[in-house]
Length: 333
Image: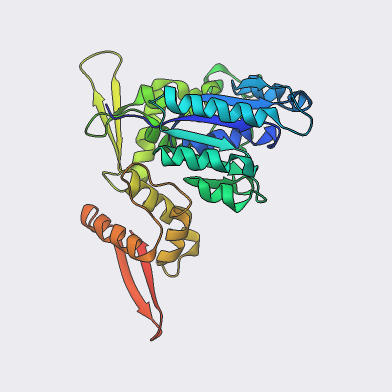
C-alpha cells in the first residue's frame, strides 16, 4: 500500500480566529491526513475556542504566560513541533496556523530537515514567514464554510433515507479529496469503505448523511464516473462474496483538468475556452506526490498533449495569434 501523507496541525490560538478551523481542516485535507491537531492558548483566548475544540477534536494546550509581554503559548508550539519532528518519523510535515513572524525560524528549520511546512495566516502575515514555508494560504482565500445539512422533520422513512446532499459538485470535491488521502495499492486502487472513512475526516458532517451507507455511496460514485470521460474514474466490484467490495481508481490529474474545464464552461466562446483560464483554476490546487505542477503555460501545454494521448477524441486545442501574442484555446467534447 502507498503511504498516506500525514500532517501535524499546530494552531496559534491567540493569533487566529476559531471560526476558521472548518476551512483550515478542509484545506489540509487537500494535501493529506491530519493525525495531530493541537491549539495553543492563553487563558484570555480559551473562551473563544471551547466549542470548536469539542466539535473538531482539537487538543487544547493552555499555557499561562510566565513573563509579562512574552507569549508562552508560542514557545510551547515550537517545543512541540521540535519534539514531533524528531520523534514522529511517520509525519510528512506540519501545518502551522499563525500570522506571527516568530515562527519563521521554526518553518525554515523544519523545511531544512526535508519535511513539508504549510502555513496559514491572514494577509498581514510577514513575508519572512510566508517565504519560509513550503506553501502558504491566506485565510482570506480559504473556501467559505458550507452550511450544515440537516435532516427534514416529519417525513416518511423512505424520504429521510435519501441523501440530502444533492449538490453534485459538493459531493465530487469531497470524494476526490478523500480518494487522494486514502491508502492505495500499487496500481492505484482504493477500497470504497476506506474512502468513506477519509470523507469523514475531511468533512465531519458527512457522517450524518445517507451517503455513509455503502450501497448509496457506490451508486453515487458510479453516477459521478459517468460525468467524466471513460477511464477518469474507474470502479471495480468484487462480487465473489457478501457484501460486495468496491474498489476505486482515479486518474487524479486528468480529473482535475476536466473538472476545471467543466467549472469554466460558462466562459466558452463557441465551445472553446482559453487555456489560461483553465490554468488559473488548476493553479489553486496542489500537485500531489509526483503529480503535475499546473503553473506555467509550457507545463500546461505539455499536460494537455499527454492527456490527448490518453483520452483521444475528447480534447481539441488550437492556437491563435494577433501577430505578436499567442493564445491557446481548448474544447472538451
